[in-house]
Image (cartoon, rainbow, N blue to C red; front, side, top):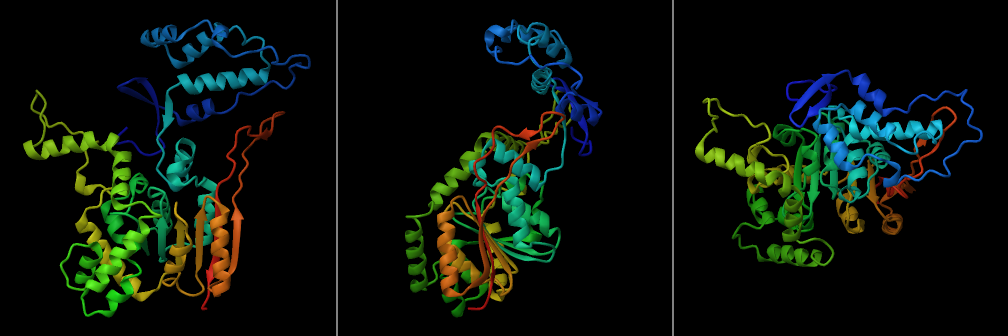
Length: 431
């Protein structure tokens, strides 16, 4: 696939060969088959049809042998139809669904699409919604809309969505603006952000980060005579500076957060477990290449494995030097307190972090808090009202119903998600 533009369609011939085909063929196979509306099916139904192993004469071994013989996907589907004991007794609608299901399984065709927030949101929500806090694509759209993020915006972000919101907000910012990502644990998580195909140059231009549990002591540190580099060293916990009071408060905040948040060790372990299975073999190969030089094949040519990406060029892996650099940039923007948007999507109770981060949001600017349960957002709503910190405060439940629209068979989807989470939004005002 390398070297072809996005939108190119491929057909899998075998495990190592691809054939470029017309993208229209892939789209046609994904659509429902046209039904002859003149067909008389008044007395025909599917009440006696049972999809089980007895209804299909071809077993798994026979299907595998057909593939080994070089049969195409269309030929395999036709063999399944011919050997199905229930196909002829189905209604025309049921036949169309059966053919669509089998073609989707045995026709190995696909279109290479450019990664975007919508595609990645749909993929993670359908495969593993827990990783993205069950943020449905329509919920993500509302978060981006109510936060009013656009070019030249300065955004405060706290998320536990594996970097999905980070990438989506970067997509809205384009090449201008600044995104300050607060994180819990040892480093910010940007696993999904990397899948947007952002480079380290994009990250350096748009994104900076700061540990959320060090935000309270930042005020005291700024009142000292320390320069920015010394403050960052103290914040990251790698200095012998004799400011015991600040150190003590940092330790107390860390110990207090351990009861309700993941510790640095657990977060680091969780992050690495999610990427180790895929990334470790490739990283080991790269390290081996760095030690012994480029691998050469028997004919003397240098082999080029595009999957092996150097550790330092990975967006998802952030070393201490990069964290210190991002913290230094974040310190500059936190001093100015000139942020125009605030977005929170955390797995922990959002009330305390919302009150801390609101201080750095400019008056008259919007904030959005996403949470999987409404009770936590109700508490945030009450405290904002009592302290007169915001106006136009509203809690909404995102709802989406997909509807199939086809001739004589338009209906809502049978299986749908129960909820897409809850959103608290409002506009900060001067108390």
